[in-house]
Image (tube, rainbow, N blue to C red; front, side, top):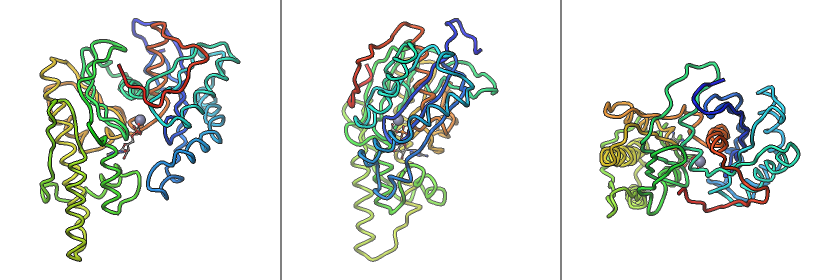
Length: 344
Ligand code: KG4
Ligand code: ZN
C-alpha cells in the first residue's frame, strides 16, 4: 500500500464524460493498480469532432467490458473495493449518464459508497498518480496553483488544501484544447487537433507568424478566439493568392502563442498568490512544448501527469474519489449528471 497519513482505500473510478470509456482502480489516491481506456477517436474522426449521440451509444456498448477489464487487471472483485467514484460533470449529458448508471448499479449491488466527481477536479488529481511498481515521487504540496487546460476548459485554480478550490480565472471564449482542435481543422490536420498540431509544429518555425497573445481585463482570464481568427485570416490570404499553406510554420507559431500565454499567466499567478508548487493538467498538458516550458523554469516545483494520464481517463477519477472518500464526501444513489458543473 502507498503510505501517507490518511486511511488505506481502494477506489474504482469510472469516466464517460466525453469520448473515452474508462475504468480504473487506484490505491490510496496515488497508486495505479489498473487503468483501462477505450478511446472512440476513430469513430469521431470522420465528423471532425465528438458526435454526442454516437459517443453515448458507444459508451453503452463498452462500459461493462471496460469495468470488468479494470477489475480483472487489478485482480479484484467489488467486495475488495472501498468506494466507487464516477464523473458527474461537466461533460456531455448523454455520455455522463452511462458511467453514472453503471456506478449506481454496482453500488446498489455491492453496498459500496458512491462518489460523484467533478471532471476538472479529477484532472487536477491526475497529478497525484504514480504507476504501480514505479518510484513514489513526493505528493504535491499546498498551497498550489493548478493550470487546467482541456478541450472544454482553461482555468487557473488556487488550491489551499485537498478539495479546496478558488477559481482565479478562465477562458472567456474557446478553451485551449478547443483552439488546437479548431486551428487544426483550418490547417487541414486531423482530429484531435492537439497531437496533430504538435506533430506538424516539429518542422515549423514558431517565429514566422506573430499571432496575437490576448490580454483580457481580468489578468487571470484567457481568450483564444482572436488567435484562432488570426490564423483563419492568414489561411485565407494564402488560399486567395493560390499559394500552398505553410502548415508547419503556422502550427508552430500558433502553438508558441498558446504555450507562451498559458505559461506566462501561470508564472504570474504563482508569484502573486505565493504558491509553492504548480500542477499542469488536462488534455493540453500532454503538449510537449507546454511541458518543456514548465520544466525549463526553476522557480517552482511543477507536477505534470504522465502523457497518457493527461487526456481523459478513470484513474484520475479514482484518485479524486479517494480524497473525497476519506473525508466522508459520499453521494446519494439518486444523484444526477451535471453537464455544466463548475468547480467551486
Ligand atoms: O482533457 P481532455 O482529454 O478532454 C476534455 O476534458 O476536454 O482534453 C482533450 C483536449 C483536445 O482538445 C485535444 O486536442 C487536446 O486535449 N490535446 C492536446 C494534446 N493532446 C490532447 N493539445 C495540445 N497538444 C497535445 N499533445
Ligand atoms: Zn478532460
